[in-house]
Amino acid sequence: MKVLVLNGPNLGRLDIRDSSIYGDMTYPALVSHIEGAAKTHGFDADVRQSNDEAEIIGWLHEAADTNTPVIINPAAFTHYSYAIRDAAELVKAPLIEVHLSNPLAREEFRHTSVISGVANGTIGGFGPNSYVLALIALKALVA
Ligand code: DQA
Image (tube, rainbow, N blue to C red; front, side, top):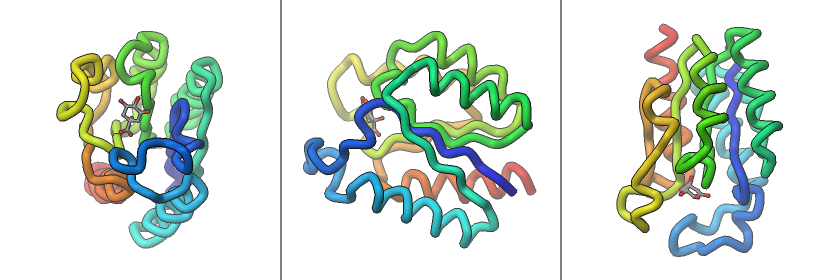
């Protein structure tokens, strides 16, 4: 089964982001990590990253139209993009929100997620394994 794994702004530059928060895995290594874990759990992961809100919304429309499950790290859009929230709500297949860091343990503006309310669940704080845990949760949801 296909899963769309969508990553928001600045995640493509993990190589230069604060490694004490995001770890030291580069974005290409993260993609390999996700693809490998997806295979292990019986999924074919289509992993994408964009800094552009409109592009992410288009990908969510694609997931809605093709009934494809989604794992999404909306990055900073998590905290304020009602447009991404509304697009995520259109996805009727399972949709899981993930974060590398634990936003609730960070600055106050990160304590709000406008996406969580339309996600099946949220996983954060486990670095690249947040995505692996999301794949395991997804497997149970689609079983
Ligand atoms: C993030 C957390 C967000 O607050 C932040 O803006 C990001 C990454 C995470 O994966 O920990 O860019 O979504």
